[in-house]
Length: 639
Image (cartoon, rainbow, N blue to C red; front, side, top):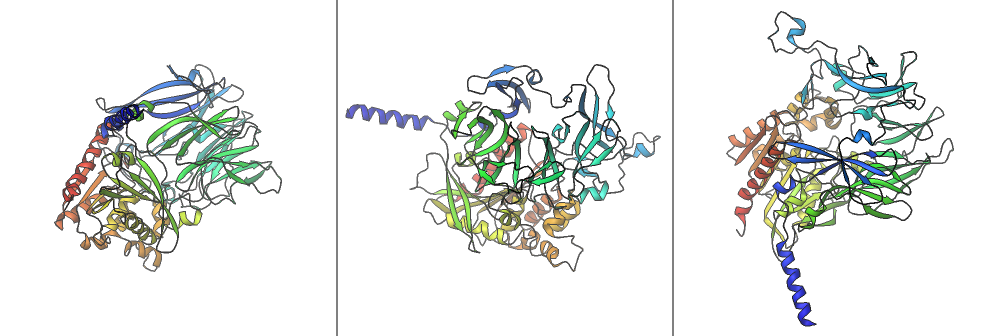
């Protein structure tokens, strides 16, 4: 018996040694799931898998059909053969679609046709560029036509210089048919130029086919109105934010029932990600951030009763429910991820409270890997609040050793820090390279109540910075943390955090990495495209000298005012087509570091935007990331 036990232990030890860890190359071989819907017969989930090709420098796609009760997927040629086309009117007579239409004159040759080789662009208002594209006078318009060959489309927004679907990310979810096929509902922000750049006021419009007239259904609401859909019983439903200019306002589910708008989540202290109606129209299911994860919730639909809708959380666990797909009997089909696993398709039985994993796109890969351990840690902040901090440990972690440790600063600034799986800021990969990752749910993150989420606005360099330092100081007390090898990393607002902390860290950190970060709040206000964001989060413009709140953003909370205190190496990464945080931010930061004699490097991607999307660029990003950490942290080992 002792001999058997001894042999078993040897085999277990050999298996542990033989396990691999995540690498940049392996990360960029993983398949990425996009669910497309439930099949027309209700028996299968149809999905797409994006497969990176480093050689071709692109993502290739394959389509699959998978039984909802489990089993093996079948490779299919076209998902259209299996899915109901939501763009065909319920009576089958028409089809709705979208095309880009040239409306405004922008190019020099638009004004001076005889100078056709000119590449000049002329603008009379803002919104001259957005996300990663320059405005060329073209707008997305919704069209419809008879559902037969040779029919001619009718432009629902004819002559209007407005977009539907919304740019830059809107798709056909921005327009739907009414149940009676007599009208089309679509989302649009009907503002132009400077007014467009300073507002978040999208509305839901209803275009009547018989009259050609359009009405604004959500005219009374000044914030975002998005994601229109009809319940199984014909009630128009959408997501709503109340305040104009605040892109991270509380997002509620609104139902129009018999002419009255009912807010299903108004008394719930959270913000909705996405929703789906139950098949009987009696409940709405939605996913939302809570306590460092994204979970599934339900809320009853009360109709015109005075009963206050009650929100119930249905799932718990250290994972994220990243998408809602549809229903199969007593089960809801979702996508789910965690820090060690990219999204896969799951079935959750609403009665039995049990999970069934349906897809296995990357399961075999993860089986061969030594995975990271993640730990919840609750840290007391300087103002006496309890803050969740995710701590991610290297595979085969040994508490008797000392590990370099990275403070991760999340972007947004109002983005949830959950069990997400990023193909760039990948905690599993960081841990596999031997780093402990400290990821605090600092002020500004949804999932901890609306007040916590909102506290970061107009306070970018305030309490949130104390939150960061409280997190790293608390974890650094552990014997397994090498306090001589602490790094600070982040992108977007996280990049701002890196630039700001570099001037106030009091020698805690030995290295910094900032990607597309805000370095100078004043020039950021003058060059970013969505002006409403800075108006809200900074409190106003830099020239408003009597605006005490705004002036704080441009002085005390401006990283440029602490550059003289920078004393550690810094890697600065920037996309050339990032118009949200334009290239000047990185140029100013790199120039300041170089002129001050600080070890620094600029990693520039001319054709990338706020993200890094091309596979070869993404691999270079990862290689330079770890190369920098090796140069600036690993050389300090045992010193």
